[in-house]
Every structure is written in structure tokens, then in C-alpha cells.
Length: 222
Image 1 (cartoon, rainbow, N blue to C red):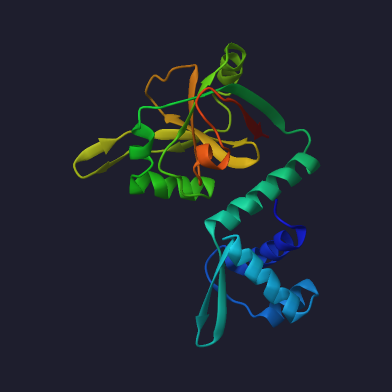
Image 2 (cartoon, rainbow, N blue to C red; image 1 turned 180 degrees about the horizontal axis):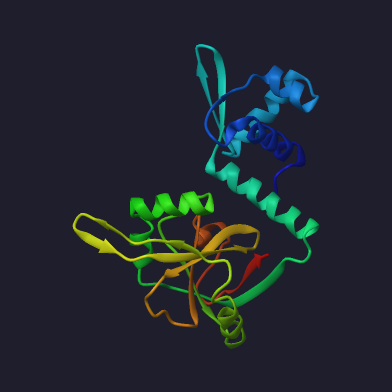
């Protein structure tokens, strides 16, 4: 779990523009923003870098800092928590099922630059090259049908290297606190009992998942 002081420092860097690219930031200036000593601010930066939430580089005018995709994802988790606190009217659905092996197609499609770029734009993370495949239980199949026209983000098709790639749609969700998204072809018939999930990390590894493990997928929307 991220320490509260590290999260506070990460948020401050983001508010200063760190999610848009490297910003000039000294330990003194960060300390002034947080009301702490430069020495403490320096330790905070080291801690954030160790957790791969930021990257630091030295330039002629001093230290420059940028928030990484991992850092952005941590901030999105915090944002989602505040939404649940201050907007309790948001509806939440839960899908449960078992982890299964896929055919490996997800790895191929998640490696295509156009898809990666579009998912990064709409979801805030570059997808790990692969998908987590889940077979829904019967009750969740009915819940899944209720989500058919709710909150999906459309990614249009495109042509590359004389080949046409179809559009896909994605629905933001969360698994055990990890921000991720359900993804499926826009116009292709898809099995009603199977969902594929993408994330900025390898979910099987991060969540220690194996085939036949039970898992819950949370979807929240206005």
C-alpha cells in the first residue's frame, strides 16, 4: 500500500503539471509546496522514484520530474475512491467468474501501436500485451447484459500495412483495486459468458491469478 505522504507528494507533482511531461522541481520547491523541509522532500522524491511513480532527470537548469503511467494509475485509484465517497448515487455492478486461458490473440492486438495509443488516450494507461480472460457465472451473464449500453468507450477501426482492423469498445472497471477495462470487438458477435480485461500491468502476475481462480470485476458509472 502506498504511504499517505508519498501519495500527497505524487498528487502535488501532478498538480504542478507532472502528468503532462517533465517539470522543473527542486527539493526546496517541493518542500515549500508541502510545508516540509527540503531534506524530507528529497526523501519523498526518492521514495516515489523507487516505486516507479516518477522519473527524475538532471538538466542544466536543475532537476526535472515527470509522473509515470504507474503514478497516474495510482492517482486514478485515489480519484475513484473519492468518487465513491462524494457521489454515492453512482451505480455499481459486480461481475464474478473464473479465470481461464485465452487463445493468445489478446497479446497480438494489445501490441498494435494504434490500439495502444487509443487505449492510452481514453483509459490513461498503455495496456500490457495480453488480456485476462474470465468466464462469467450464470448470474453475472445477466448482469453483463444490463451493461450493454452503459459507459462503453468506442475505439474506431483503422487500416495499417494494407490490413483493416475492426473497432473495439472498452468499459473501465476495477479488479482487487487495480484499474483496468473490459474490451471487446464492437461489431463482432462475442460469447456472452466470456469477458477479456486489459490493464497497464500483467494482472495474472500482479494479482497472483491462475486458471480456475474465482474473481470479481467491479464496474461503476454515473
